[in-house]
Length: 414
Image 1 (cartoon, rainbow, N blue to C red):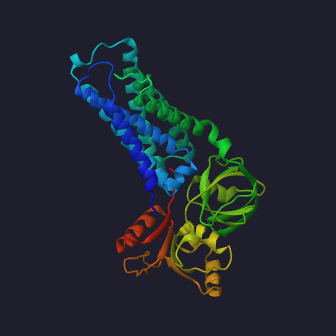
Image 2 (image 1 turned 180 degrees about the vertical axis):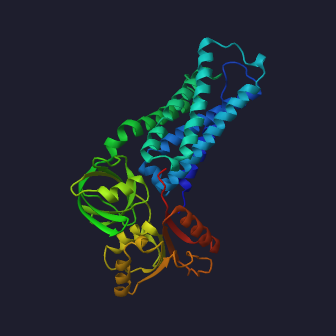
């Protein structure tokens, strides 16, 4: 799946920033290095505007990037790029000859000091974000939201230390104002309003099925009914004492929308507690759906590849009933407890001639290798599973042909 619209949006926004800062007229003559420093600083603050905007989980942006996992990939690398611009801006400021810096007023001195503070804040918080896997999600989420503080300091620095009058109604002034307002509102929205505005499907847990030693399937009865397509996922909050109330992403493994099924494997602190302590009639709230594994839009001939709990979006589609696509599923798992819905898949293959399934238990077999696969023309490939597996197999499939039709889901929330 391509995300050209999203990439073009980022490119055009950053290009507009660079051009506006390049051709704007300062209110006093400035050194060439100072001019370059302003351009780089402008790119930094524009980059962080995009970082906050991408964090809102906008459905429009999700469509432009062809999946929320791609949105978060660009969100991550934009933050790193913007931090690089911040550091470069600071280095360029130090290179300006002292006699070229002009008269420093108390207001400009304060703005410069706050700019340095913003730089240290960005460095600290982005480094913490990069080590997210070592933090509990709830802690990471709050630390991540603190990026608003250095962003606010950075905006103050931009407006009050700049050699350009950004309060004037000029193309640069208008652009800076629009991006500053949207960036700030996006951050405030995620801090204060997102939880209340977007989780408008409420419900209860009406059934709990233990489908393996470390995996549980929850039946959620919702109000209002959720409109979704097989292959999509949701963000789920569970309101039970002792469980983290932060939203977590889970694929929908079936249901008619009034009731949906969510399958959880005990992989982290949250899912382990759910597997051990979840109770019937517990209140839940969901937001979504997201995802672009649209099997109906694929070709008649399809290859599915699933890893572990990544089987759930495929189960959701098969639960609709008899299929008329020609599907060959390769299901990789690690040991008996990881083989979710194995009996269901075997029975489905026995009763539907359009469906074939291959089980790959990596505890007794080599991992799935597609290097020697022959993919017929006009075949759609769908992959869902661990990120490393999806990336490895996608690379191999793409090496066969640049025109291959590949759809994947390897969502990482942090």
